[in-house]
Length: 534
Image (tube, rainbow, N blue to C red; front, side):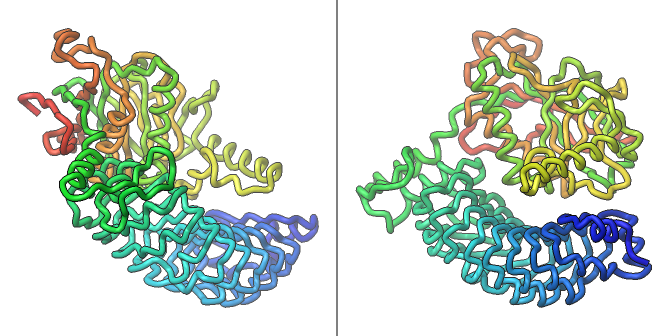
């Protein structure tokens, strides 16, 4: 018996078909994929996601009008060679599967613009040289030892996301990518960076944290997540860059001095971001209780309080929001590794509670909304809005706004949720914060929250980076901030950030983590003033 969604698509001559979730999985387990899907030759959008699907039939190649094929979050181990027949395909999402190799025919899709292969088991890739229209590729979270052959020949390629692999080398041919704007290679085995990186004139986001960089100064600069600082440092240290060489963006210096001047320039490139002070305050006031229910969902959380953060200036507020966005797109790996949330402390009742609940049992007022709804209804509404947007714009909505994070919790029986002691929901990671504690443009005590399904260390790394970037963009505590219950307007400089500790306890009352502790905030040239007792 045919599937109702497939029959409806055939009867109504629909151009889109979405099959997702537990019900579809049950049908696949019982009798396999409905072969009538591949008779819908008029389809231009096909999504089969969040199922137990192990393979696709050769008949996939009959869908010659497909422009988008979304197969994320299945159990695919292989693809049929017939995928190479889909010559009109522009967007292909194969993320969160179990693929170990790809058919070489896939690289014959010369109209393909975006390719998502993250979270698979790939150890090698076929040549990309024929993917001449490719603009974005995501091959993160695999087991690749090098970038695919031919990737440096793709003149339209603007984004390479290849974090969490075993890549050890970036070729000097990187300079042959004139459109490159984003290069993410976090958590690989890279030791050296080519000077040709400075020839990528459109490069705005360069992410190289957690590599084996041999140059210790460069390692420290990379840790601060500033693309300009990294490129300036490479330029000043490169023996290949000649004095007086011109070009590039305004503000990117490529002039290299000789001898001792080289050393001074390198020091300046490293030091220009390291002038402010962080003052850590010991605290027993702020606590979060992490329940055992969250262990199988999103087990790790780290929090801290920023005292009297000055966000009155509209530009300061914008910077605060922008650095969170930048981190989400880089070391947070689009919220798959970690999610940042920030809250106004004033309306919150401590201690907070971090737990997991069925989505139908979570009541919240999402950020930007006025009425309370369940998390289940929120996700349903967002999916519906995504489909309406897709019909209006003819573009994939799951790449913008909150929509792009829906797949992270798709099919989950429970969601992680942070509540205050009144049981009001504070945040629903990785999707949204709540309106109750939204940040506004004023002088404000801010709760910084980082959650992760990966590790506690991931949370700490992201929190360190968030605080460091706040310093870099000039976000500080107001000068009359109370420190140890004494008003220190005379001693607290106008470039200090006051951070108060938050303790995370288990349901048994035992301490899980306190942040920041003495091992956190290890910034090379930032003075960190710590309490006597931590």
